[in-house]
Amino acid sequence: MPSTLRARLSAALLAATTVTVLAAGCAVGPDTGPDIVRGDNPGGDTTEAPKLPDLTVPEHDLNWRSCGDKTDRAYDVGVPDGITVQCATYDVPLDSDSDSDETIRIGAMRASTASTPKQAPPLVLTSGTDLPSSRTLLALADGDGKAVLDRNPVVAVDFRGTGIGATVDCLTAAQRTVIASNAAGRGRDVKARATEVGTAARAGADLCTETLSPNQLAYSIDAAANDLEALRDRWGVDRLGLIGVGDGSSIALRYAAAHPDQVGRLVLDSPVGYNIPARESAAARARGVQKSLTAFAQRCANTGCALGSNAAGTLNRVITAGAADDLDGLSDKQVLAAVTTAIALDDMSPAGLKKLGAAIADAGRGDTAPLRSYVSDAEALRGTDGRLVGRCNDLRGRPGLQELPGLVDDWSDDAAMTAVTTALDLADCDGWGSTDAPAAPESLAVNPLVLVGANDPFNGSAVVDQLTQTLSAAKASPTAVTWDGLGFSVLAHSDCAAGVLGEYLGAEPMKAPTARSCPA
Image 1 (cartoon, one colour):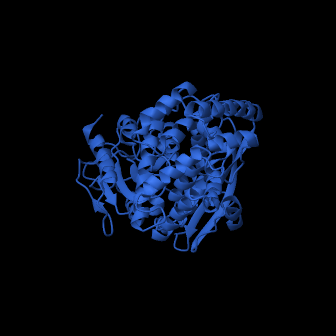
Image 2: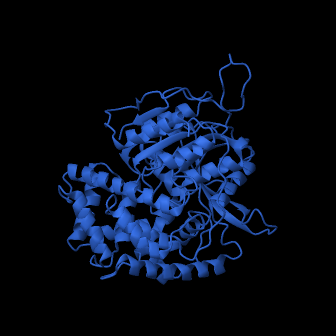
Image 3: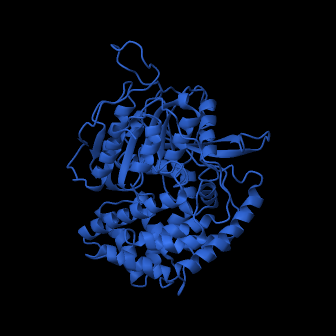
């Protein structure tokens, strides 16, 4: 692996884990080497400044309609002040490799401001199965990074079967309950819980296969990349400017592999490792989410929140009570989903920290009502059948149920709050088939912009070695930006990152330095 590439992303992660919070603006790290420019003009006149591919306005657009009422119904979130949100759907082949004319409806959402130029090309956002992309866009529109929208409209494309398009409904209520709680219960150890979750998962896999057959595997990273290409073709543009957030980074990279000449910009925001075996990616997630929870607890304690000076210890006790069915019916998995979703999307100012901290502390004292509200929000976003189908279809190298207790033992020292839930989440997909591994890009038409969140509450930030393998093989020379705040999507939460994106969208390749940091 080229040392310059490893140095850039390693410097990014080092900055993410040992950041000195800056007072304002963007700070820059040392330049680890010259950018390697790859675009439409390899070779040629060396005296001419290199240019990046143009992004253009769609010749034929979708049938956009105002949809503030839809955001209220779907996500219980209103349209942020000063933002125009419109929704549309478009139909794509359910299986592009078959002769069937069966289609599926994909949901899309567009956000802009009064300042967005009418002829500005749209950027395309996907957050895969981490969150509906449309919900991630609403977070961007309501966050510190919303200045992006003053320059370009952003169009979110939901992962098929989720969000505001056609959704999937294939599990029974009983199966959802077991999976949502990871079969928590008094006296149940990891082995017993894994057995019960696996039983529900296998029954659910059979039912979903029957419901979706013969297209049960047509909900995947590969299919999601095809949906982006269908949008590009419908728009009649040569290239897409892609923003892949979290799991959506894999969709963006898969698109770049399948359509290298159709990528105009490539932003990997809070990325995950590309096509990494389940055991390895879960281990990194357990450690990374533990770090996010620890950062939340420290910052909550610093505000004087109800969790007290040992906020991490209090949070851990509430999680442990959920595992033992001693939290008025809330499980450890539900507590973690509630807290991490709140960190991802909610206000993490001192007031927001205190509100979430109070809900957790109240639950520890027997009043679970405030925390239940957070649980409901999390399950509505992350507990859908479509999300489970997509996640399981792309989960390869899954360890057997009998291996899960050993993984918990291996991970517990570094991930006391997350080891059990992360391991048992692998049992959610027991009995499911999986798609073929998606091909990685052999080269990239543009160097990517990588935004690393030090406290990503969904996937963690331990992505350097995993991501560098893919980018190194594609001979990429990324610019890496780190952010030490709390939240999912650096771009959504950082006006500094939005400024760097503005530079990246220019006509010329980004200048040094290639390792930068943004303040929390």
